[in-house]
Length: 250
Image (tube, rainbow, N blue to C red; front, top):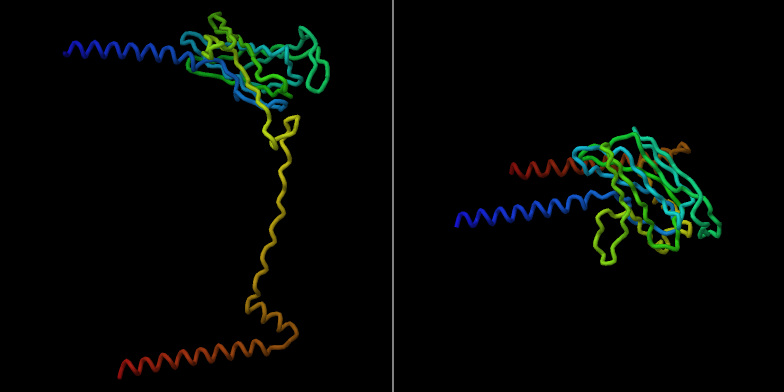
């Protein structure tokens, strides 16, 4: 019985190790974040590059930009320790943009090099792009990840027809229609209405304020009246106290 339990535990552990071993690479793909953006908008994209090797560092990242749906404007955020090169060139064929302009040149590739992503680390490379096309539902950014040992991994596989994930999927940005009221056709957010400040409720005048207003003309009668009323109230209170004391003694 003991040997049977040991064999079962060994098989289970092996299956678990195999499952984890297959799952870890799937989580370490090069991706673009966020994975979804609105059609016609401007957005910031971050190409997230994890290092998958224990014996080598990632030293270069090359991202190809779409040429069938080119992005008119592309700018990059500097990454400390990395050099960046933007490659512009002629498109395979002219493309008519959503605005009706004919585009013949665009950004073809961005290359980051000179830095290092070590084992167990990742790095994000950010770009600002726009406006995004309105006529397609996704944009693919094939990427080549080069390691310090000379190995180059190409993340460029298209999605499979059966919905399963390929071995080296290309970083893909899904494009969705802008929700009504969230922005105009160019992806600009509508101005937020400014609420008018609520009027502060008028405060009831205090006794001191009322007295002060009445005394401005030199008339001290209200002050004297209030003083007299206070004296009367004090005498009444004192009388009530004396009466209660006498009753307690009696």
